[in-house]
Length: 386
Ligand code: P1T
Image (cartoon, rainbow, N blue to C red; front, side, top):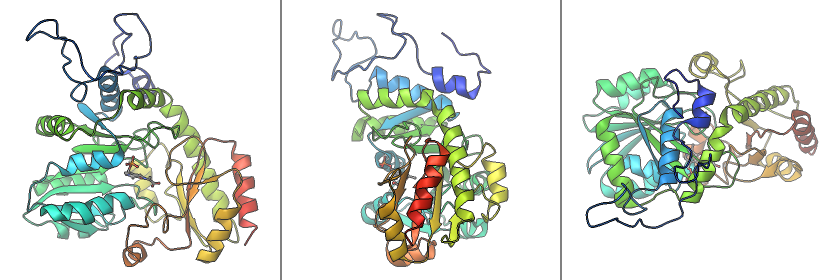
């Protein structure tokens, strides 16, 4: 089976990187649960030597994800965090990184608590403001790391404009595309050099695997990432690779449903008297609605946040949900709610949380694909508790 050059997105999601198994014809790529491969004779093997270095299930997923993001090659890691770590491993002592100030708390923790110890410096910048990005470059800046939309206040950054700035300063642009998914946002087409995902989220989509991926286009990045993946060894397991491959087959269908429910919940919340603020890039009230229309033309996905009057009110609402589950993570088929200040972003100091508009009264929703009437009924009954 050979994909046509002009194959469309849904077809690429379903078929890219996957061939019927040559030994049986199995249509689904098998789980190659092996640690090593037998050599036919000294110096002669089938291209597979040791399973940290190469695994056919992982290779199928990597080819699939590279095609989905419009990249050349991708590398699958044991978690989203190890994918971020692999990008950072391109850097050397003394290098400077510009980072979106409101990234996932774990990304901030890795940069701030671990990588600063190795002589790297980080400037946390509101990357939705191009002037601030422009001013943050130093002669040592080698990487710009942008998360858009951000977790959890859903601020957008202009990928094309930041790619131009980064390249003008001789730096690489990496985009964390976890919140949008490649269905809704195409960073490489907009000029990014590297795209990463926590595959734990929309790409796998079923809340049953932890993983990460980095998609690359430049030969020097590809060579280095291959070296780091093998040297540091934080590889995605064959079973998790198989799960994510199964997930990407339905990515376009799921993202349509997540987006429809995300938009509907945001509109519902915006009209609710107990809700003081709703953040969703698909609402006209979002400060970057114009950029959202341009950069995310197929809709804004399933992530939204809202505020109620106080931490106490937020606690009451969170404890009343029946259908929606109180849990970290996002992007699965079932709706999750969380309290970022004490859960996903607890590692971000309170003064930094205040600066990015992440208050103690903020609740984040990852809209699943349930019937929207059941979701709004649950939200309604939860909010009636305050
Ligand atoms: O959990 P892991 O697969 O290691 O991915 C880390 C990560 C990276 N980037 C973004 C934008 C993320 O949201 C995450 C993980 N986020 C959560 C667990 C969460 O609930 O927000």
